Image 1 (tube, rainbow over the protein chains, first blue to last red):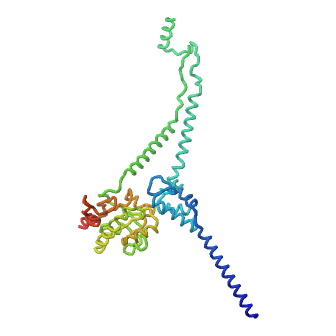
Image 2 (image 1 turned 135 degrees about the vertical axis):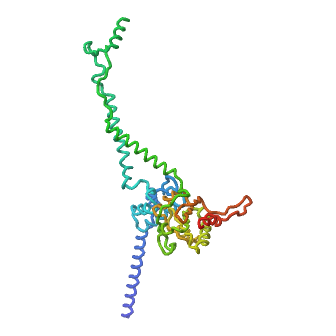
Length: 166
Length: 202
């Protein structure tokens, strides 16, 4: 009887351990392969562009190529890839044109630096021009005495003619 | 009487700034012009010498045991380069014709067929190759470098390069059977390929 109880005890222990191990394995499997939602896929797809149609973000592109790409993103997410890793993969495979914004390297920096620089330069020029136009000239329209008047023969003749007409 | 005589010195943009602005504008226009010129260029034209390029090959689709295709290795042979993709329906129409043509020329060793898989995913590309029983060398156009070299406008496109590395013919669209108004086949797709390749072998 004692042996029977012992065997039963060990059997129950073994079953318990087996169940625990199986549950742990299933839990681990679930943690490694979560199914990415459409929102998670589209969040990355939105930053990529269809390679075969003009200016269409991947998340709204209806072509077969885009569907395949979205599936690939889903697969990569389920394998634990990060957003940056996925984007880099697409750049490596299909070129920089697949990303919405050019990578900040080399001549691409011009895209980021030039527009604000041009706007800034334009603003400075506009400011200077407006200041020059609105600032009253200290020399313009100043009354002059006869003595200060220039000895311009034409002006003198004009004034003389005007006097005669008065 | 008053006189509006402005004797203040002219306050414009300094000369150095003007030079910089004009140089910048000219540079910008030059960049735009180069970009426009490039975008308006079509594919490489017959008569153009094709630059050497390399293409990694899918495992199972190597050429002479090499996992990379190098155009320079095939001088003295006619090279047929077909751009395709698994999502491309017209490509499916010509897949069997290309394979049959390859089977015709493979024993001679004078012609090399190369499939360039354009912006595709590998599982779908492999499924496509398996579906159509393709056996000639195929590889992914990583970074679209090869398609940019040929300035392709879409898929399928097929380029025929002679033994000297000069492009001789460009096929835009698939090789499909030509039929007359009655629906009779005038020339099948394989024959069309042969008509292009055979003169290049002489």
